[in-house]
Amino acid sequence: MFDALSDRLERIGGRLRSRGRITPADLAEALSEIRTALLEADVELSVARAFCDNVAARCSVEALSKSLTPGQQVVKAVHEELIAVLGGETLKISYASRPPTVILLAGLQGAGKTTTAAKLAQWFKAQGRNPLLVAADLQRPAAIEQLRILAEQAGVAFSSSGTDPVDVARHGVEEGFRLGRDVVILDTAGRLSIDQALMAEVAAISAATSPHYTFLVIDAMTGQDAVHTAKAFDETLALDGVVLTKLDGDARGGAALSVKYVLGKPIAFASTGEKLGDLDLFHPDRMADRILGMGDVLSLIEQAERTIDTEQAAQSAARMLEGTFTFDDFLDQMNQVKKMGSIGGLMKLMPGMSKQMRDAASQIDDGEIARIEGMVHSMTKAERQNPDLIDRSRQARIARGSGRSVADVAQLIKQFKQMSKMMKSLGAGKMPSIPGLGGGLSGARQMAQLAKSDPAQLQQLLGQSGGGGLPSAPWAPKAPGVGGGAGSKNKKKKGGRVTPPKGR
Image (cartoon, rainbow, N blue to C red):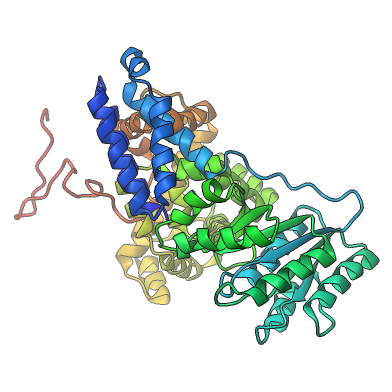
């Protein structure tokens, strides 16, 4: 969603970092470009103006003149202001001393309230809570049945009885208390546009149930209309926060950057996909890191913790470091990675990714993973346990069985052996280091720190290391200058000869 804004801010930051001295004219020009970038991202005018004024206040010309890295100081100020505009801190959910904690969801039709209710229920369940979903939307056809099905998928309780929305909501809260549920989520009706009937109904439900939290569900792709909708609902309801849906869309993202400043209410949750697990607390600092191309390691770790079987992963890692890693282990790891989401999406969360690398990540074909699985499944059990058995004739048989070429099979085996060899050297304490950084876990920590403090230096170090000697993944596209591109050293001439390097 923030790709266009991220590209603009990265270009501005890169230009500032390259200057040893920043004059008032340079700062004014950069702030003008930032304001234009925000407006093009559909950020409200008052928010864009306040953003630039606050960045200018953080970057006094006197302080910049004394700094050894003035460009980085400006980028830091932009980063801090982005965090402030997005809400500053992550919302901490507190629970009622006398359960249940009642959560009311309001919003226009089509914003995704019903699906968000089920996602919230699954999120609370993952926190160790026992939620109850209440379908109080009696306007939209099949809304009750939709929520019932989603409740079954999430494995949570469901309630909806009555013909009046207020009675349904009140009965749902009473049912939650009777059944010992500690969280009750009310899904209310929406309209195509704001009208008095909608507001009166939601206000009546709120008065009858006294919710502890009232969240407005907003479609992030509606831009400035989302902010106007939030204003209208806040005048009727005492909103506690906003839930942004469809944050994985390709809209410009102005709603996320405007709603906190205009409404004064935080973004509580963000939905980034269609699955029930694609909802989490909104972290302003992590979103600011993503917008400025710094990656999001914490979200990546949390995602892995939720989806990966730690015991199985530990066993695979041990075999990998011992040098006994097999294609069966490789399949298990690929299946676990698939649970975390698309490969391209995961790579974008890594720190130190340049724009070219992120563009290459967006082109990764997740279907290639299925084709790799086909090649591995076409191997015999003995071949998966010992790839050295696979000679040319066996490669041909595997290629026929998987519908791939012999060259594809040979490439997969080559990359697997390279990976196994590298991992075995890691187990022996021979982790390749990056020039300017240490090896092992300390080097990884330094990479994460550099991603925030000086991403340009991190990209430069990664370039010097040639990628640290890591074999490329079979599904990854070739970045510019890699794998025989314009930047490769041994270029083939038309006659087929390879020009030897100088010095031989």
